[in-house]
Image (cartoon, rainbow, N blue to C red; front, top):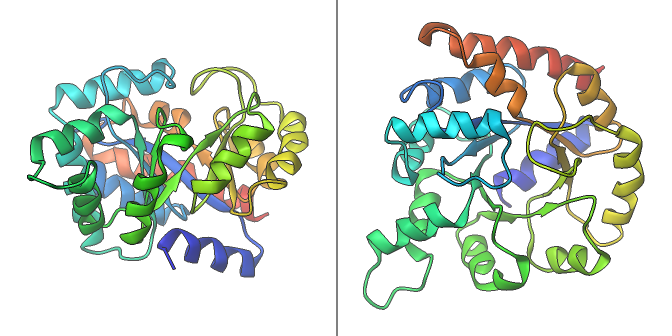
Length: 275
């Protein structure tokens, strides 16, 4: 059983909902991420979504784009992200870590490290598993083209996670169900991260449709910014993701206050989810 599956199973037994906060690797300081990850766990995170910086993040709004640009300026790429996970795993072997990003950094990683005769994607999958990654969400990988990649990840005890949106058709949900594992990530808003107002009624209406096709947990993100919105979503979802707001909370903090600020913010979210 993967760490993601084990986490959701344990939470279900406790009748609790999962909290999966997002941060961009290497932001707001190049060396702060492992410390920040530990602080988020201390604040109540059940898993961590770690953004891989990319120069053309089409699904991200200005807040996360800015964070990614700063991390790229620090020289943060896939190799550095895997090093951060490896460092985190030195003292935390329980909390799931999901890499979130785009195809280009994964494929570039493989191009640079490709070995003769090796299958496409094999270097990334091997090294991600060795670092302690539990899941991968690649925004621009369509499910119909990911069967081999999903199988390779599963062989290394990692999950391939997909996005669903308010515009997702029944056919797309079925396609995702055929290859996804761990959980699916439901984008609650039309648009990019951090945009729009959350419509909890629309989310509540959509989740039964998703669950007609999807048997694994459903995590809802995009538009969750505070304890009240997190609590409302947790009533109908299996997990809550929060990202852009965390980036905003930590962006102007001095280096020695970043981790504590994120931890305190997430404590409020955790309390709301458990109340």
